[in-house]
Length: 278
Image 1 (cartoon, rainbow, N blue to C red):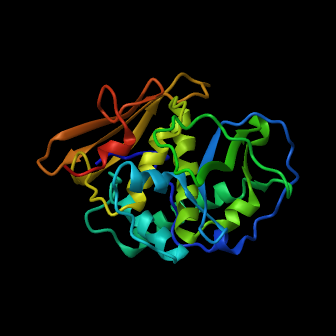
Image 2: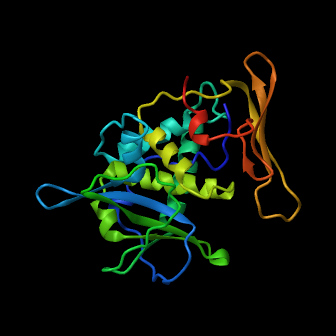
Image 3: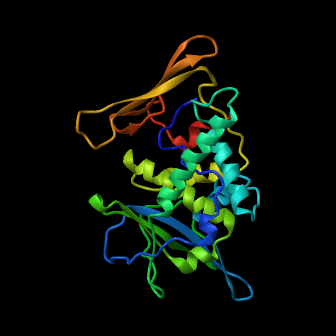
């Protein structure tokens, strides 16, 4: 398996998202965005509106993935968390309860880090569509793509995630999980140079689907470690790799990133592809 630093980002069960208890900060307008999450807004026959994650819309209608229906936010978080963790290289063969709990807490911290960056835009305003999607599907005539979340970096002040509250509250529990996962994964992909959200959307669809997952390199008997090489004082991503021992006793080195480009030990690699079983 491959240890993906920053990829294991979905938290264990938490009800923070549904509770809507995040503090709403004053939002400076006119800033440039570094990406975000879009949704598909459709008008129903009765004149109402429905909103779903673009990631799940594409997963169903482009990639043909089966998305198990779920209206239980906490259960869906746990399901996706377990799927993410199933492809983590450093997972012991027989994890202890203490180990499992420590991993849950690591994921929880990642979720809370994203949630604390939420800032709701003023009522009556909308987020402009970000042209980072590399669209592969035109919605039906009664539907349109809308921006639900926009990410931007304030440098020294840290990241901010602008959220359209009206759209956010229209989302079902499963779609909220999809948006949350999308934001965390896309943030990592941007570090490795992704200019569109295509890979983040596909990976989100995979992790929320019922597609079988398998680790690329199989299970490691002995614990390994992730190493990173970068020039001293450099802020950009360097070269990261996992080194461990296989069941057959062979040393395995799996490169995650080479010179800031995600590799997964292949010349050209889509993170959304490596975890699919053949």
